[in-house]
Length: 404
Length: 236
View 1: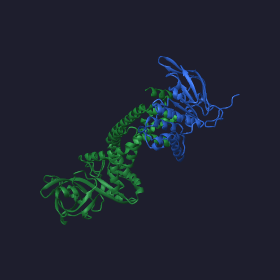
View 2 (view 1 turned 30 degrees about the vertical axis):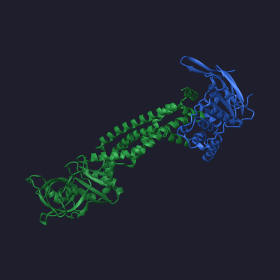
View 3 (view 1 turned 90 degrees about the horizontal axis):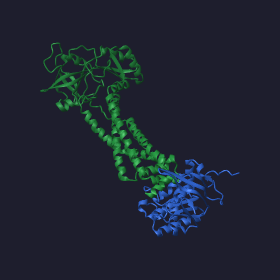
View 4 (view 1 turned 120 degrees about the vertical axis):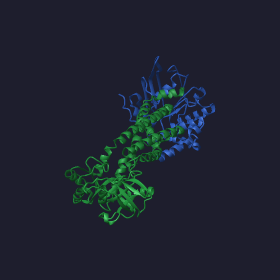
């Protein structure tokens, strides 16, 4: 085997310029394959990484939805959160409400996503500087409502810690149905993990938010559950599904599965383009190995005459295909990562894409899949020329080579 | 009662011929009909013999050489190489027989262009599984013997025709074969270089190996111990 590997690798040097061109072509198709492999599961992998980082093992959402995918709320979400918090293995259950508010900062009126949480320390965002929301919210008498704003509001709108804002349900006059504008004071600047690109966000105490909305405290857009015993997460999911009508409990795996079912077009897209790139690689390697074979029939016949069996000749040609595909991998990965980075930036600049999510994520599985597919294609591409080489008539070929 | 054939690689009796052709016929099916390249040729090549096969183009010299070297099989008759009838062997057995016991030298050298001279020589030994230290030692000894040691690291493209043929002879001797077959080994060389190459083959036969050389050149054939003349697929 060592002699075959040696010969196959040396075969790459037979015509260096041609090999370089073929490797360039294979690198391009391999790069496309890597990108499609990264895209196929990239969003889910990125989402999974963010979800895991936040430390919430279970999320409870209105039935059939994903967090903040609409205005639907879990009825009695706050009570359900209390009941969940009392379950074994649960460290905390935090009801969260998401809605849109208008924020007047100085002379500017801007829309913002408001995250209603039960006081500070919820873990739904991380305070970067300043302080977190105080526990227990505020009352109209106690002064301005404390809020934590995201960095975009600081950089784009110049909002600073200690600044006063005006929060309102709508851009116009206060609706008759209740919900008056509230004066708010910025107490901190934070990183909001699920911010969309160019989205202004702020965190506010749940009761303060409900007051601005003119709605009673009770429902929740989402309940975030942190486990003290992560092994009991699936058991909790089953309990919630059995006891909470109108709500779905999702473990991180379940969450990703539900998100994945809504992202099938990415999978289909990557499947089509990935298959195309494999086909092109296959044809490229088959063509070059077959052409190269035609140019060195004499050499093959000599190898047979020297004592190489048909099987080993076929293996040698197969290995040449594998060697070509193997040699293309560094180029494919370099180019693929470069293109993937640019494509990722392009897709992430689309509206309604969370800032911390990535479409093209290099996971060990994506890398392994690419390597195996590239090597498999190289092997398959060598089958036909290998078969041709193995069937070569030694004497007739030697005779023919001398005549030509 | 005939004695059973020895296993592959088993040493032959010193007196037995290395290769024997008995009433060998070789036919090729061509679009215009069947061509009979050999018409009942018989030949024995003993150890240490240096045999030259001469004759005009198309008389069947190369065909006979290929049959003697087990790269081709006769349509009728039998070729017995080291006591084994080649027609009765499978491809793997024939390949092993060639690897261990036959060395080839070709008119067009057929060195692998991407390998150096020493790698070309080492190739049959690698194929035969000779350990690397022994392989290196033997490769250098062979290159030294054919006067090519100073150019061991050169690729075929950097060598002259005569040098390439010397390397090809070293390659043919790599696994210490019993039979060396040279098909027009001087065909692409000038007269003086051709003579050197034939002298080298003659020395090889002095080691006890059987050497069969096909040539057009009667002067070079005269350097062999014995000449076999062919015409129209028969030995005269």
